[in-house]
Length: 159
Image (cartoon, rainbow, N blue to C red; front, side, top):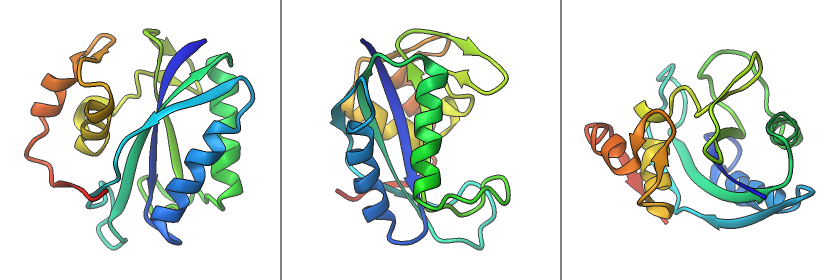
């Protein structure tokens, strides 16, 4: 089993409900166990500002699935939640990002791990640091240092 971390975000159609339901669905993926989840965090959108604020969380899972198979499962869950990919960084019912897959570095056409934006996004780093404060992100360093470098970003822990 590999330990992987999934970023979860939503800003449409009752975001808290979307995230909590997605956590249940992560636990239901075959060969996968949900180990722990972070609190929910609120933040302004990264992209176009004419959209609602986001809620975000991070889930730690153990999985026997290969990275691309896991990615397919995450995208299936997004699709089940009505995810529409109209524009980059646009509003969404659910966004599931494979942030880390063990200590592996993956660079494939469909998947880059660690997630390409992980080191620049407080809304990912803060919940990740909450559940794994001593985490070392492959090729990037300690989660605490990465998170500290993004302290100027407005992220609010809500539950």
